[in-house]
Length: 266
Length: 321
Ligand SMILES: Nc1ncnc2c1ncn2[C@@H]1O[C@H](COP(=O)(O)OP(=O)(O)OP(=O)(O)O)[C@@H](O)[C@H]1O
Ligand SMILES: [Mg+2]
Image (cartoon, rainbow over all chains, first blue to last red; front, top):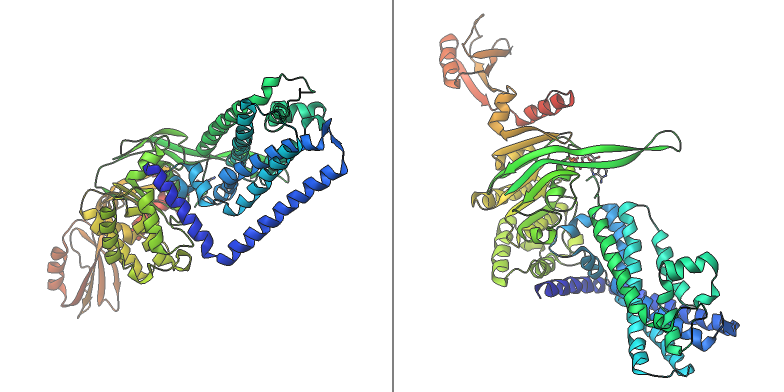
């Protein structure tokens, strides 16, 4: 309870800081809107060029794109700013965060809450909306539930990926953009049916790292299609479990990472 | 209040060896420090650059995990119980700000009240005191990024105290301050220390801070404690002595001697003499001197802490602590 008030205060402080530069806030909002528009164009162009994606119709593939996009935005909104840890670790600014009576992760997240990215959520959910309209989904209670849970689970999953890749910087201060390879690369990977990939690449990302359970499997379950790659039907409903597992791993990696923080010599 | 037992921190760093090769080397920043600091003590923690002062404070505040040894502050283990400990300690790292860069100072204080869950009345009372003693009123409504260094440091000190910490860790709180600000900070800390329930650990390169504030002085070098005691103990250990300088109306007679004092210099046509007092009160020297030559002026010079500490630093470099 007391903690909640403390976090609310942090968020309020962040909001007032951002709005104290009113002009740049507006600029960021516009550039975020621009990026979102670009996302739409990408999807339209891609799906306009091909009639079929990895054995799925465009409408079917859109379901997976929508879940991936919404999940990514949710994860990005919630913990995407953990990326700033790189700067905090390199400059030693994390010292000041560590001496406060609050968790490190929530502080980092709330000290730079990317309100401007909220716009992208509209994009993600509209893609899902379009997919629902285009596909003839056989709505059962389980599917309705899955439709609500899948994007949230995808959000948790992407959140975990954000945290894990940011944690790299505790061990490797110059990790730079490598972490982004996993986050943005992961989003792009999950935007398409995994049948478009092949070999060890698919094995590693879809099953090894679990990206196949974020949008592809729930998509199949919603559409009522059997998996051409042979996983049973319940796999589609396992996405919350996979997300929780990823979150658990992220929590452990994060804790170990913070213990490895070595500050700077001044 | 604070216990350290054989506390160590090693950093592994990669150093260039040849054009591409890099070898891993271990730097022992803190190399087995054992200290016990009681409630209400004010301890000056000093040492040359790179001695390991900041690293020690970071381990005490839960920022860094120790590589070895034991540490407890307020009965808590700093790293595992970091958030609980944070409620009982106040920290000022001269280089790192606790304040919101873009917000007015007063706003930072308000946010900190929520973060530390301080009852409004306590918060207001502490803030009022800091405003008076540290003279904050003139810039309370200025965004932190527009404050001068000295103004910001006064803000940082206030920020570290608003939750009524039992232990205060200050890493170079007077760095870069002008004479007036330094004095304001010192007398503020002195006031705080007099109440006797705040424990204070202070690192500084300005030894006047220590002379004014700290009864106990801990000197470290290369991560090891080389002195732990009062300033007087330090002086007697390193044989620093008081000096008596006398201006005479007549030349000092040849072969003048006082038991317990050494004539260090005779200047100005033997009209000025400097004695080093080994083990004798100044009065005894003056009494002998009046019999030898009429005295015009006298000054007694206390041993200079800077000199002693400089000697201590160089002594420990050459390996003999
Ligand atoms: N993050 C780090 N990585 C590697 N080495 C470090 C790090 N922090 C400190 N050191 C090394 O540890 C030693 C002690 O550093 P520390 O900052 O504790 O010194 P200090 O006593 O505070 O010095 P100063 O008076 O200059 O502030 C130095 O040799 C420094 O190079
Ligand atoms: Mg230091």
